Length: 79
Length: 370
Image (cartoon, rainbow over the protein chains, first blue to last red):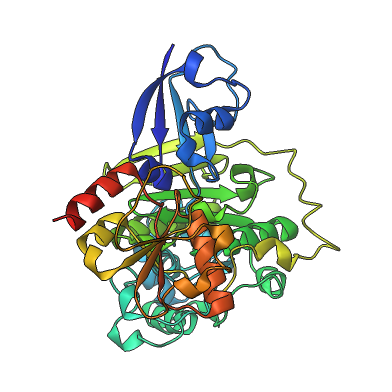
């Protein structure tokens, strides 16, 4: 199943990517650990701090079969 | 009660039914502490002061610099060199003489945070570094204070209200201090002036709603604003019941070591690869990756010393020429600079932000072979 990944802040900058379509079944290999799966797919994110949201709710796991969007949200320090 | 002059000052706000006299009196009775009088703090302070928040505390140990003026528009050329907390207080007093303002002209630290914060009802985080953000959050949890959070990165900003009616805290979003990989601020990454303006005003809006009890408070939600697209995303945050705050606090006190990871005074300058390409003839590069690590990158002005070998080969590194240190991600190179600056007194080193990429190498080779 196709799903959209949205990258924010310095993660988007690091990957030079703001949005990408992935295959949920093959790209998110561990549905109970999205972060780990994301790092496996995007190794440049190794060591970076971020949180994940599925369809607008912060969580690190996928319970539903149908997922539209996964957001990758790093913290911002600036003020 | 409000005086005649105060009624005249707040007249347009008093006309708003949802605020009225009772809301205005609530604003007057509340005490709000603002941590950081910078890009976020300046607009926020202007609006909450003008709205009539009765007692405002401002914590900031920094002085105004010319590079602040494009976004910290509470200040002007006369402000340069003056402490930001004191200068903010002076500026705000002339904006609204009917409120009390206290300046704390020093940084918030684990040693003074509880003593300062305990006297306020709401705390607003307008700081510019993770250590302070976690410190403010933890102090608010310990003292059961509401925290209005705002932060920015280049064209994006985040806003939320934490610790409101036993709701989520900052650590429900990010449990631990970020790694150095994720560490940058406005002085490193740059910022357009309007972004902290927008985010600071959104924070001020939350403060006014919290005090007057109108509207929906941004608790349990993270607002993410993008200035380039002019989009706003909302993400629901659930309280992380598993996070063990008790282990962070000893005898109900903040523990300095929890906030010291990236609190060091060491300043590491960074350069972005486009800028480096534009000035490629001015720098020597120092590659601190392991031998054989990909992508391959060799050339006349590229010195290769793996991080683990740094101390043994330090005599090969010039102290006079400008050197850009790099690795794959920008993390090991930062560590290398830390070692060279602290232990060998180097002052000519710059970190390559985010490390090298194949694209960078191709462009560098094209440029230097010309």
